Length: 116
Image (cartoon, rainbow, N blue to C red; front, side):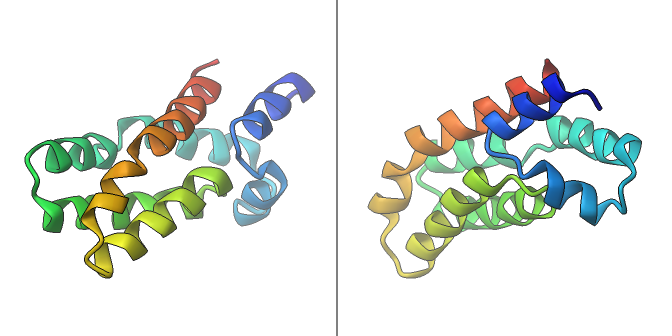
């Protein structure tokens, strides 16, 4: 992984050093799992559930995405999703829904960095 790639991933809120540590320094495996993240459907499930005011399904999708983003050291996205899950669990669905523009921005930054 070259310095430019590392900087792009860091710029999107991914702790590359931490992620590499999780993958025991195996850059190829890390890249493989970053690409798998692109196929994960939980972000779309979260958006669809919120559009349909299905907060139980939204919580499930947000919680799953939180776990995936945490495992891949996507610290910014993971932090936002952690807060959203807390809001859902406390019954503050309006707050959880209001977080979506910020979550969307972070999610798009991660996707763009992976794709570059």
